[in-house]
Image 1: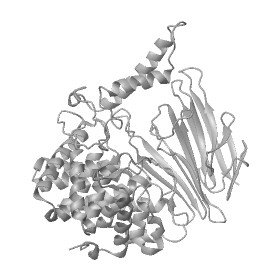
Image 2: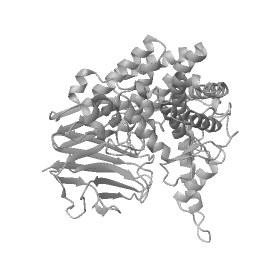
Image 3: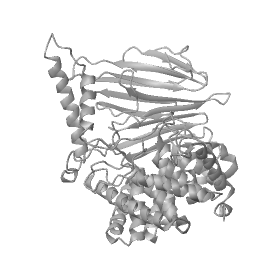
Image 4: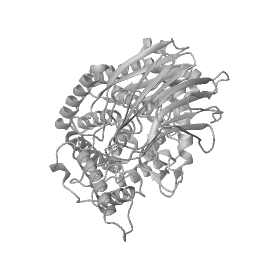
Length: 567
């Protein structure tokens, strides 16, 4: 019956499905039978993961031709799976049919111990540095190659032999697509051709096998959202196929995850609105589709504990979560996250604006299916103006590109929340990921404008969203004040350490070394750092206050210190 599942949904669930499908329908390529990748901005590539989520939405909507289209999309998604039992990427999916095949036969990865990916990366970095020195030492009469050119050339050459994670393949597509397939098989298997179901089951056998190999090898560490998906898919398909070894693996790993969670009641991807949205989706999958009471109970404990932490850092007036962020793309909760969708499901029409379309909207049909489970005592904290408060929580981070056994540091997060201001900070992190935001501010001006400030870094003219070694920040938030101590030991690499301030009407006009004045906020600044360079971002609305670090030798170690005080 057309739309039969929609008739069983609440008004909020129906809205999420219909909004997501209206958006995804726009990007459907009838010829390729896949969604165009809206994130790359070009439209000449297609998204394997996005297409799997589109198939979920089509089957929920079940309008004229939707089931047939879903079957065609699933056929194309299945064709993107990598079938290579001896390779590290076995069972995952190409991110796009236009993506190149990762190289095969480069090395016998299963023979190496945990952390070999870390050692391989760090070894290549050292080799490229020495190679640049050797080329530079050959003197006059030779066209010298810059160190960065050498590093990039060596990386490109290595990528032709070794399947480099994130560049030649994405291991996480196993877990994302396996979750989407679980929902499809759970609800819609009778509507699908038996041959398609058979192919989906074969694909899931490969995906789960590859996911387990990855988890046991620790070759490519799993961040929190992927680890939760791993637990769910191994449990779900283990029961579907009667695979006792998979079931035991899932049960054991779930108990270990719960034990780790109980240490501080927090997750490694701490305070991340992007990944909390995925976490809540997977915990909803466990709540709805887990096959044993114990597995459901573990998910229930983590889901409710996560909401407790969310409530501590959430500011109802600013409709955002205070920093710090262990991993984040954007400073606004609604920009790259499904958190607003969950709040809309929990509170209805009053928060409908938080569920507007963003780059995560393709997940919304699945979120609509699993729903939301916010403890009643937490709901009260998520509405109304926040109490003025100082929050302190600890979490154990995962540095996914560092040496196993030395990549799980205990961090302390502090946040100050008042009526129109949030300050966030963390200390103890040694993560190399640029998505770590250890020092942040958010505020609201008198006319309702919303603003943000974050401390980030990059190589000159490069991107902040990279992994860089030798840069760390220990920061603290207190009433009306943010402090940050920066350590720089980069092996001779130049960096720009800078504060990015964004919001309506932000300009460089009232930024001096000692006082920064923006709409709705003035800061007195004390900086033990080089003289700053103030630059307005092209397009307006953002200012960068840049403190350049230019080491003289690879052995240089430097420090910067900042105190920002609200006046």
